[in-house]
Amino acid sequence: MSSQTDQILNEIREANLSYLMLAQHLIRSDRPQALFRLGISEESADMIAALSPAQLLKIASGSTLLCRLRVDDELVWRLLTNHGKPESHLATSRLHASLLMAGRHQEAA
Image (tube, rainbow, N blue to C red; front, top):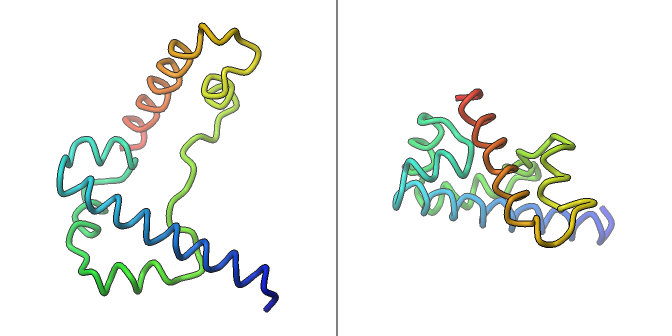
């Protein structure tokens, strides 16, 4: 493997560990918010909350990125980036994007 590939794999592992630690913390501190913000099911939350530190490290060490972008819609990206809108519309655009993503989370659940 090249050093660039090694670096990418290391960054994936770091992102995985950070994501799992954040997810576990959110689930344990405010479960309803965690389900919404992470876009995960009750069952997934149960499994993540129950992971030991050794299990977190083992799962994070894989080469597959565990988290994924939930924003796969051009409209949401335009709202989040405020593309083509004056800066004064930023808060309204982000609120609109949040509402769209929340609705999609409810549809998926």
